[in-house]
Image (cartoon, rainbow, N blue to C red; front, top):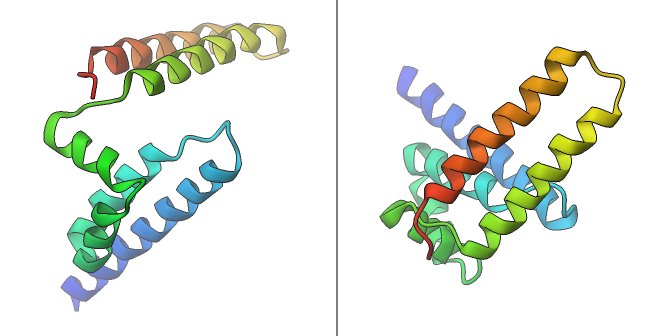
Length: 122
């Protein structure tokens, strides 16, 4: 019973991540590949058939495989992500949000950008 529940939860997480990835295909602001990486990870724990289909996908399979093998991120994706995070961090200063948030968000984005740029290129 517990194993079946865990399998269903992994499958549900995989489906939610795939749906979020599909939203990313339609909306350029939402990333696609990170959600598909998470979906493949979850599918690998509860839905091996779906994981195999994702890895075999002609467009999205290779980035998942490269990430799993080397933690590689394409240079173009790094640039887009860093520019997007820089714009978001700058735009937050134009909003009426509290000062702590105006400092915290760009700080987190900077840390993510540094980590992302430290990943190997494809």
